[in-house]
Image (cartoon, rainbow, N blue to C red):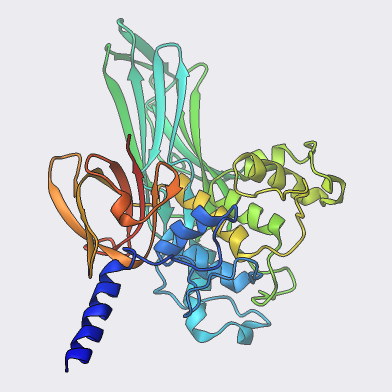
Length: 416
């Protein structure tokens, strides 16, 4: 009996001596994509294997990327309707809602745009960034006088503003179409510090009430003054991954690094910037091998750290994208679209045990305690540490496994 007690005691001591958490993944230590992998992995956007591996070098198929993007963007998977692709049988039934979601998602990026003319500020705001199929896009157009004097605006008739949807320069819909306005000229004064505000809703339809097809759209607000009308615009991307002209979707086809860059830039509303840089010089050893269509996407993706060059100064644009490549790109996508819901505050206390916990004081002064997941990534001043290395007063930003009362799976701390 005494021997058994000693064994139990030794086991208990061993358990208490274990670090606060194991690594999120066991096969990513030290690789350039490690932090990105840990952030997206912490939220289950990209999942690992049952034995704790991430498989960073494994290639990614089109269907893999669809599922990852739907998770990253938090899209609804209620709809199961997808086009009758010739290879639809290659898309499993359980994956079809993900395909439907990625075909119909709408992304306003940026969700706020601003133009200044002297002391007059013109702002166009969409009520959010990500929209599901058919969801209304609520738009607010604000004109603010930041000067110390009254500014007067002259109009040729009763119309003061307009909202226009365009694709490739072609008008798709216009708010004012079919509306009647008085024919009398008028002048509107705007006092210092005051604003005009105009709102409308776009249901993602064209002028004939048909849902718009996947593509890049421009949402434009216009202050329709008699002379020198002022406009401000947002980019609205409908759909991110489409089928092919031959009627296939090719779910099993591997995604290239250039294709990955194009999809993520599209989601960020940066496709126009990429197209403008199609002739950009690319300082890579294999730059000449990059296909014409991909050059602008690669240039912008590298600038934005969506695509990382290799140590030998190649970019390998048309090589298969790996899970590590996708983690880097999706991490940037989520960061730029504010998809990470960090819990922020200062450390009050940490407890290493079963379970481990961290207590923080948030910016409002409220003190809360969170459990720390068994598998967790923890950094202090940019260096990987165990939970016990965090100190009272450290500033922390944490990601939780669930939005409400989930375990902390990723922790960044800063302290003296």
